[in-house]
Image (cartoon, rainbow, N blue to C red; front, side, top):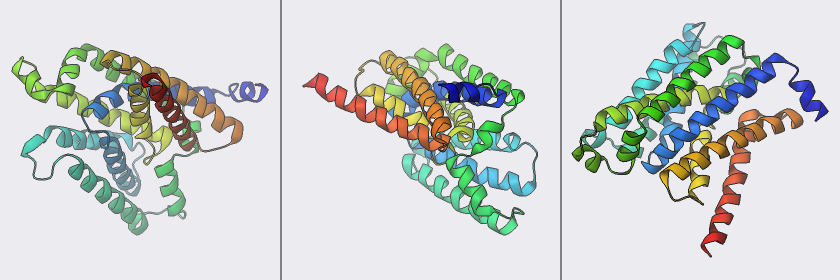
Length: 277
């Protein structure tokens, strides 16, 4: 406890903790929708695509890569979620193509055009998360808070529409719901959350923030609202526990949080099996 109190005496640690909880909370809401729509792999695809854009921004020496990464990732998410049955490459196949292409091209760009003397270290930090989370400034926290607040507001305002489109797009369209607009909103929220989550867990582990809380909640809850609430609780508590453990044992924040999520998933799976029996 004394060690933790010493850590939290530093402003950058408090900033990192606040950003982590905000990102985790919003990611849990998005995760319920993506998992139910059978699009949970979208998190991986978008985070890998964002890695490729980050590599390009690094080569272009942009002072704030968010200005390039965020709009490009939003565009990618919109294309993936709104292409539907008209696309020649559909669903998880399209995500896989974009994911692998972006990873390969991003690493190639950094190796060929990068100016860093430690390309492998930079790539590893981007993929698995790094100490950059502990270099956040108050302005970074404000930007994260604003983006998360916007994502949360949109989710709450369009809750009924998102709910109906998540389960049956054809029925939702027949009842007057604008399915394309709902998918567009989901795509934008997904892209924003993924870009923010990469700062917390890295490109490869960002999707863990989205998928695991929702899957864990589904082990014991049957209603959409119940899964959403429990998923949010799991996400916030799991992220807080992961960050605290990473501080105490000097482990990577992203990997520690993902490991906590895996442990929670196992516990909830066992609890769900016991309840059914």
